[in-house]
Length: 307
Image (cartoon, rainbow, N blue to C red; front, side, top):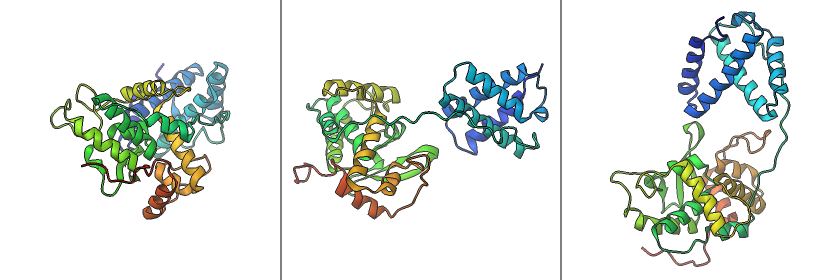
């Protein structure tokens, strides 16, 4: 029995979300994994064509996944993937109606993100040492906390993305959306010190700001490992990961400024909570909010960094 949806339809959908929607290969792979589960579940219900599908088929599939022990978060993601495919199928006239209309997955419990307090954050970035690794790791941690960057964003930062005179960094976020984010004085000083030794191991024509000991752009996994190791080295009691620095950035900014919309803009996040709507604000206002609120925007030493 042929699977529903068929392989040609899945291939067409994969191309659509990978190009028209500009989703990453990893996200596309997740969609296809969810749809392969749909195929198996519809096969068990002897569904032969997309045209036969109705809401009960999808409700049965959702129930089977729930009984199998799949988490609420995974059920929601699965249903979201299925809905996305059905919308594409409607557009291509493979379906006359959306069989997932009206269905809801169990709501996942909301978990508050784990944070560092401001003292712990400063303790974390206060790495001593003038060796290559120490200078790189301090600059990396300072920039993560200074600007609230995602893991992929900081890994993709190039030297040319740092604008020292304007105290900003150009960041390419999700969906290849670019934004300009302020960078604190301490982070700029740490980056300047790092750049003085970066060339010792960096391969020729490598544009990445942060490189591994092999001279190439540092990987996501390597950043995660270094953040965890630096947390242990600096005496932070809880396990650290890059996104915790982003959460801490957002929390500390909100505590100091109370400017939720401004922090949303700095994060480049459409929904800081599930009900918030992305709001554009004047960048000068954001920079002013940043300078007055972020605990690492100014160093205690007001002298200009050494050339």
